[in-house]
Length: 171
Image 1 (cartoon, rainbow, N blue to C red):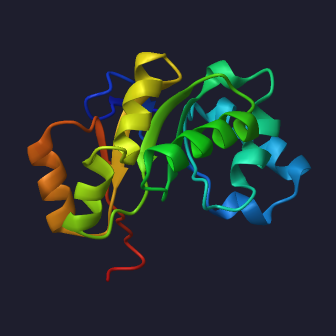
Image 2: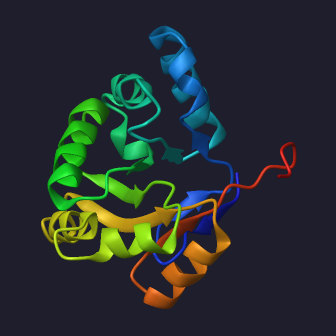
């Protein structure tokens, strides 16, 4: 497996990561086997999200005793500080861990939405506070909108930026 440093995190992650969205349709026993195979293949990065129904819980169960083998990234569509603190707590419980390597703002759809996240009592405050406590190691953002990510780059706050790309779905 080949590895690269991810964004500004300093994390050396496998070029092939494990995407958590389809895992929500798999039985726990099979998730456990998939995680074992991922370890054997050298995959060390898992991306999931609060919005992927039971993905965090399935992965959390499969990672018991193996959490140190992976960098975990998850994300939330919540935009307020209070809501984000709740989401972080849920993610920690579901993933059965006491820290998350990368927590991302999920699918910021407009500049106004980005500004809301960044405002007083916006979700960024929660992630910054949890980062200071060591619960969240790195802060990132995802979007399907290039102007949003261009603005995010100008802010120089985010350590990762995730943009959907698929050779199959080109829209």
